[in-house]
Image (cartoon, rainbow, N blue to C red; front, side):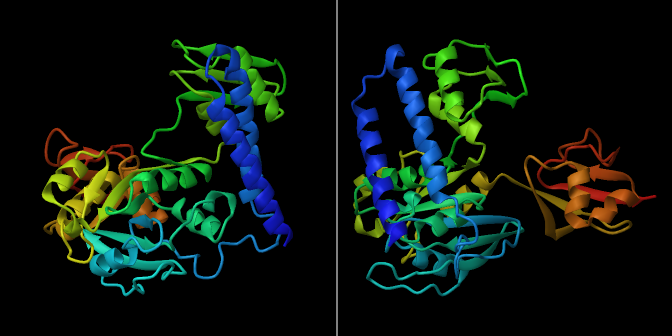
Length: 373
């Protein structure tokens, strides 16, 4: 009962604050006030969604799914938009499907193999408005979404695209930033010296006073702040909070078998969007290809000495970690200690094969042969 009352109070506070911010004219004179209000809301939301002590703060039964494979993709959406049907037809996993809402009550995992990579798919229970503030089981659903390498927001093409904004709002409130890069802001706490504020380009919103007021809300009075791009108060709050995750997202518009060709042409122009029919299995090829592009994975083929390369089972690495050292650690950490050098064939070398060290960065579909000491 107490948690329900706390939820109602928090919802009222958030609603009032959002109304105040929406009605406040945005200019230099009000930017400090708005920045401070946003910082206070961010702190309140973090306190609301962070489990207290040992009072059942876990992920909950059915939500804690072990991460397997080379990447994890989560299906997020409102109830009964076709997430379960999509998982069933993509991965061959039976996730209960019905014509009424809230059929899926726990996380249902599935696995597909695409271009040699093993990709885990998670059918998450439908989220509802207010999930970011703890309503329903939205907290557990979005907590699992934070662990994904890619999020598919599944939308019913027959319903307003306002659903898209609502889901984005819920995920943003839980610290998930979709299709964005981390703010180019340098932030370093220190023991003394006050706030050292530096900008390397013109700022349209933040100035020294606004930065100091936001940091004061977090009881930070000594820090170095460097703004390397035109930043907002939200950007600075994200950096100070330090718990944001930046995840690529694809909007999957389902049930296109129920709309006209003219409407389909319009949908194709929506950024980060793939129209499909999960029931009829239409346009799955485009969806899989876009999923692969957004995951940013690199395949490295192995070549045992004196044998042909093994093109059937590549070692799959994320784009930002494709050095020979990363390759060795992916197989076994002891392999790096035994490594003398590596021979690499492919786009990352000037001649084939080329002798390289552990710091050499490889590209997609390179072939590697390890030589031990």
